[in-house]
Image 1: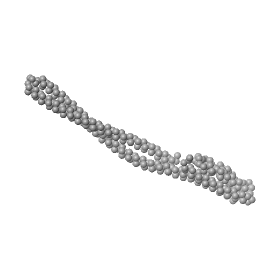
Image 2: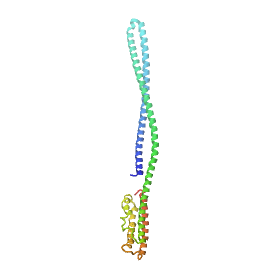
Image 3: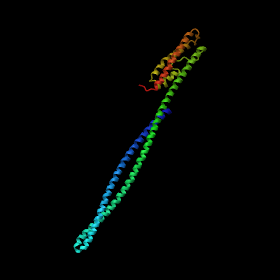
Length: 284
């Protein structure tokens, strides 16, 4: 895999990871909101309980005061008030126990309220941090989306340039082949071996790398016919040099063959260009 493709792939993977982080932050925020709401309700309930405890303490204090007054009145009544004094004393003791119990409950409620308050502050802090983190992640995601788009474009450009280079090299190889054919005729000395269209550099590229990359395009299928004709005509011209020199008496045919070679070369070049353009578009 080339660097541009690898960059594009890594960008996609990173976006997936960022998406997962964003989802988890959303879940954390929802959880923090739910916890905060639950803690708020808990605080309200503890305040209600605390109010009830205060009311019980107030009643117990009044009961204790009434029991004390009753004991004083019973003492004044002497023997007749003794039974009432016993009852008043029991009521006083019960009121004292109630006061003690409510005081302990009040302390527990205060502790619970403090813990709930601390927990709410912690939950709100967590929510705030998560919100800020989410905002940062969303900004980063936007930046990374832009980077991913850039990576896709870079990958497309790199692929396009690579294809253009392939075709350019194919044209250069073919130009060298034609140049050797012209030189052979001009010097009447064979500088080129007879070969068919599958044996030259362009032919090997066409049946190898090009087939893997471009075989699904219409342009690819149009290359073979003119290329084959070029080699047929070139081999025919070379036959007028070897084994015997017959260039002069066949010069008209040789010239006509070279004209046809150039015409077929242009057709082949057009097909190569078409092949590359098609490869850069989605195939139906």
